[in-house]
Image 1 (tube, rainbow, N blue to C red):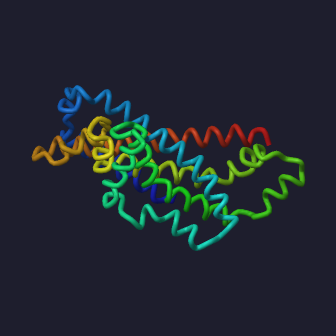
Image 2: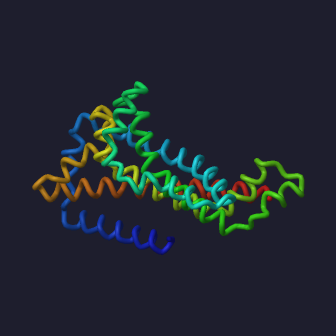
Image 3: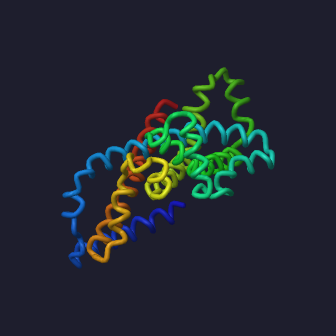
Length: 240
């Protein structure tokens, strides 16, 4: 995973250098778009909340599933991936109408959670299976609390999986155009929905700039979360 991420960063850097050297950058079209500010705000909000919910829910679900291995559990978790989300978007939109939240931010968050959470659960479940199964018993033996176990034992051990979940969630969330536009009803603009029409432009400069902006957002999110996890890990381990 680390080698793949390193290779991805190198490719992003080379692509950026090539764009600047060849003069293919053209930011005027996006700067002049009046909805860019709102799109950036919604994008940061949706991606951040999706990452947070993925970490919290997938950690608990992965921990539980690792202790009780059942085939139907895995099938249930992976069901949103087995059934393409695009194929069931109409039913999802109808369900959102029934509960009174169509074309709202919460609906977009739910659909982003649906396409990212199964991956996160599987990542954490596999990591918990690799760890010593007697960790909770050992923590209780030394009079440690549940909070102590999660913060001082599991967090340092799960930091690599946390970063993997963050990167995967960021990439999937920022790349969603169809489901965001459909469930959001066009009222929840994101950078992806804003740039997607430009990606179909016949102007290669606009296309390259749009791709560059999307890649840059993904890279900045991943880098920020990597630094946040590293700093948190150092703070936690300094108390041990």
